[in-house]
Amino acid sequence: MKRLGVNIDHIATVRNARGENHPDPYHAALQVVKMGADSVTIHLREDRRHINDLDAKKICKLKKVLVNLEISMNDKIIKNALKIKPNYICIVPENRKEVTTEGGLNLVKNKKKLSKIIERFKKVKIRTSLFINPTLKDIKLSKELNVDCVEIHTGKISNLVKLKKKFHNELDRIKKCSIFAKKLNIEVHAGHGLDYKTTKILSKVKEIEEFNIGHFIIGESIFIGLSSVIKKFKKIIKN
Ligand code: PXP
Image (cartoon, rainbow, N blue to C red; front, side):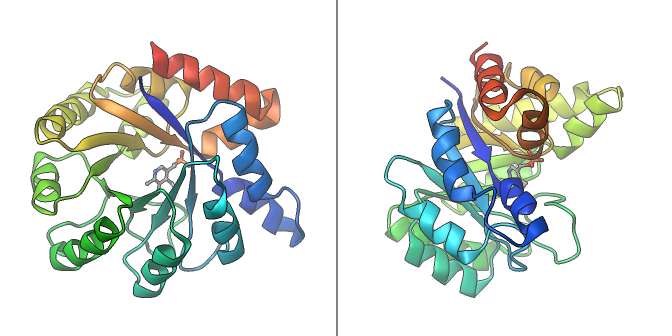
């Protein structure tokens, strides 16, 4: 059964627009799970543009919520993550000026550093994932890094589908990578830029076990409500 992780960063974006306390991401974390999400994803960015330290600390303390914390390779952030103990970690590239995570990690350049980081999280039994581009080379490197999961960056296929362009080559790449990863005993996740249509397309890739979706869920909830959006996604990924 495929799982749905709901990224609630943009609840914090809306809150921060007013500099007050509403809407509260802590409350959102509890609510999305009640509404059917399997886990909650938060990204504690180095620039703290949405989720802040207190949000992350409080959300990671929730007993009934499985929390997937996205972090960069920044040492201070890693130390903090080890302190607040999320259930899961996803390591992502981070660049100060980007609007959102624009691509997967550079595994070749960061192999040594990543190996040490993964080891630290493995020691405390936190499931760890690497956010990667769909290439067989990166799957092979992920195996060498002994990581539990990979999250495949789905930004490219999402853009192609939204622009009504040919997306089958990219879908093929994602399929091949998912099959290869599964064969190597790496759990496969997918995320970035997903909406109903792209999630439906990718839900046919049976090796993908988890989808992490944020911006579209929060945006669409303005029109039909968070609970209805989550239910729609759960139905899509079940098929
Ligand atoms: N997965 C990862 C690793 C991400 O960095 C992001 C964006 O923060 C997402 C999933 C969610 O992307 P989106 O908000 O476009 O659904």
